[in-house]
Length: 474
Ligand code: AMP
Ligand code: ZN
Image 1 (cartoon, protein in one colour):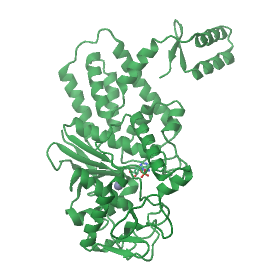
Image 2: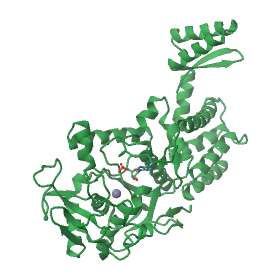
Image 3: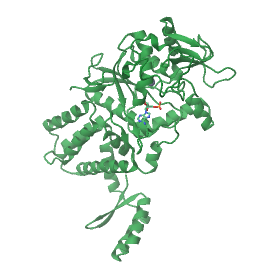
């Protein structure tokens, strides 16, 4: 099937062809583990997961890397300010190593709750210090580096022809200024740290010996060193959130291409931001953000959040609101309910191969066309509505949908069916009986109050022509 993807480098949708037949090397810039992942970060990982699933369903063997940034990411893009990890450790009153482990485990919990397929490799930046030193040494030998005394080893961006090409910038153009405060000792505003020296008279929790002195690697170096080691000198897809393209990814290219030749990476893919109602980017650094715990504690299924994410295209910003999540959750539950009815039918028929193939190809080709997730979900709805298709064929197609989008429709529908047959405990049944009495006495306020109590106990009360029925909430 033809795969088309928007490549940030060419600013065009291109036909995807891998470097090696049948295989895809895919690198996603991973989380900085100084805090919980927020739902904006997770939007990006959901999109990456669906991209990987789409490639797999097209027959490719995908090697996927998500790195764990546990050192070197400073609070300022100008290579100054505090180390985010050290700052997080001070906030939590723990060591840097402790918070790295804690927030990585929390990240993996969210990852699994969202049914994202674990990557092939999850390397930590701190496990690749020697590789980063070797890379900096190679750049030094090629004449791309200089030292700022007492500060660090820097990359001279004026030496790299085409610097900034990923975002169409140039050395004298858009990158200098605005967001990047200028360290006057740098030769060019866009130069960046490869190796930072530990401050004199201060023992950092994370520091290593190097040919230039004790210190730690700059953030942009880790992704080059780890991707080259795990995916080879050239690979197919490199992804990140849209904030990474202008600085982090242009800097990665500037470090890699002098060593391995251009183009280092074939396709660059960037996910747009998740923003709040006022259009503000959700970010860890301002301290106010929503994580999966906020979603879980309000009783939402993580799949409802995933469904919300997939209703928007990865290149468009997604404005998050609780009302939006509520309506996505209802949409998700409607699909689950219809599927549950199909699963409980006694006469399902047999899978019609011709019909299966048509719908399978329709969904896969839509998703393969630059990741049209929302349009793929419209086809899923159409499939459920179509009365010419028997239950067995629909169920087989839902097994495919679950592989393709990872939305766990069948799992939730089976759970719903088993919940439907679950008997409510006596105290909840007593509340339901009291509500029936209240209704017959037309005491609507009491009936509403009793419904709220039933709801709080984890049950739904459904009024049917034959009386009310208690169904355990999903
Ligand atoms: P971080 O943990 O901050 O290093 O970010 C991990 C990934 O999430 C990076 O690829 C970021 O570009 C991405 N990201 C950060 N904030 C957002 C957001 N509000 N929406 C979507 N992606 C984001
Ligand atoms: Zn990176």
